[in-house]
Length: 327
Image 1 (spheres, helix red, strand yellow):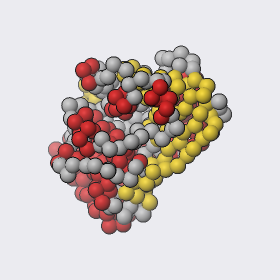
Image 2 (cartoon, helix red, strand yellow):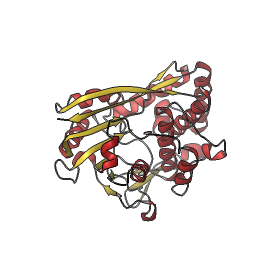
Image 3 (cartoon, helix red, strand yellow):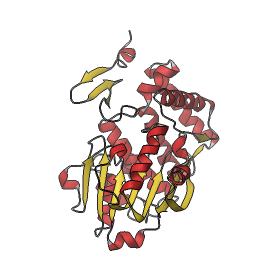
């Protein structure tokens, strides 16, 4: 057995974690979730957050050409990075028409908050409002990094520990690898339950489906699809963000669209996007390699070929979002 093959063997850890392929995964909470839970994943999530802020508005008005842009984020670095390189962005964290309400002061719920970076940024920008972030994984920032109007709770979206009609705005993103179709129905029911009448909900997702993909990516995409189906997930379901809102029967004034995400072209923006997606492919390596029947070196070469192909074919993806109001 080679060293690479041996690294794929799962070993159990205490406190609900295991190591697979040198990455740490949760064994408690949402067991369907495909992505790791370690420092590398924390950095990827924070980087992904800023990428989506950039893409939502077509790029930066002001950016320093420093190496910070390409650095992996840490809890100690994302605040300086945000202030230095992203201070010109406006409304990059949401699309819903709630600016005035946020300035006046409302109660906001951030589901699947991950590292909590969205809630923290919003809390700083809107000090009159209160922000609560939830996640099954406790990778929240340390206390000294959390604004006074922001808090975090370990909780599952399928069973939220909040009273009915207790939030004015509910925000959720990048949960496509978290819920089965039946669980999506439960999640939406819970969201509607905790949302006040007249309150707004916004859902945003990434997308593994690519426009103009190279042949090498089609193989990986098929493997990801097969792996998610084996776990009872449907990665295409959250792509219909509008349908998730419509199916609740109580969300009205729905707006749905998508953000175009260039992979390795369209200037600096495309370079940042392709780096983020490359890290996503790396994060999925331990669960995708067995489906493809390849080892670590073969997978790394496949990813390298994919990223080259993205640039050559000017590949892009559609990142869907939708928002609406509870009647």
